[in-house]
Image (cartoon, rainbow, N blue to C red; front, side, top):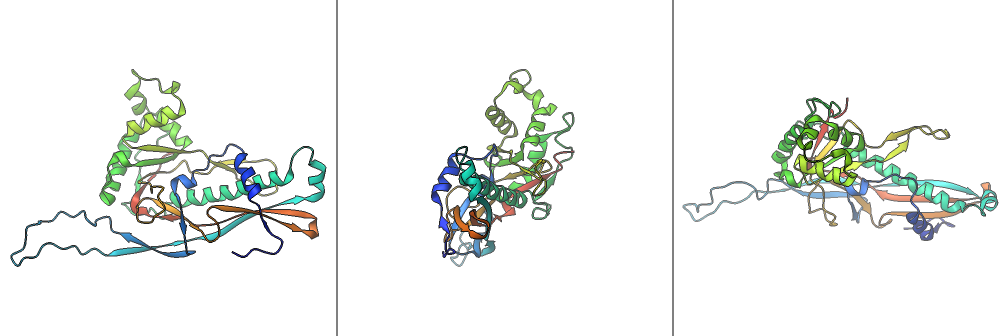
Length: 322
């Protein structure tokens, strides 16, 4: 793809920023919606009905020698990708003044890439925890009691009801399902009396490591895996130095779902993908170009991606927090 004159592709800076990730943000976008390289910016995706091959027929041969025949047809959905980017200026004079302390170009690259990934994380969070997409009765389950009510919360009952809805759509066993929640909801579940009473004479939950707690809770709920989202961002306006941090993934929602496998194919079903326009880049690119009027170097991080969610393979849990 053509680049502006004077723009340099900076893979050296890309490698540096990958070796020194900024802050303690754990990004989950690529785990929940795995990236998938695509040839076109937008296109139709063939979708095979979940009922294909799953009907129960009388297979006895008909009097005229015919057998039962299927009448399956392919459905379609459309994915879209868009170009996203962020630029961070490096003042040449300041860079020279500070070069004995740190490399301003590297720091600016860290900022640019982190901003790009935060925006990606937010787009995926908004696409997955979306009460508009998952508005139908088959796609949305509202808990009877919030999970931060330790006395009355019943996460096992709620997961059972949500799985009943998911099973009715795709026939997936409970043991294959994943649950996505943020860290606040995760801690609330572990405080629930119905969870703690189940193991209070055998295991001390408070002394478990985070990894053991996650697996314990998955086993307790009868599902395959729990994904605990911890990403956050500064919600204050640009130019304000004092940060006001907010959770990227809402306390109000959870998602019980069948994940897409990492295989690069639309044919393997699951909650969704991030289509990546591969003619642009397999992930993201880092570039730099001079800006003479400000005597600066502009470091730019860009990507060409989208979010594709198939609500058939998930049930959104609502009302998790008071």
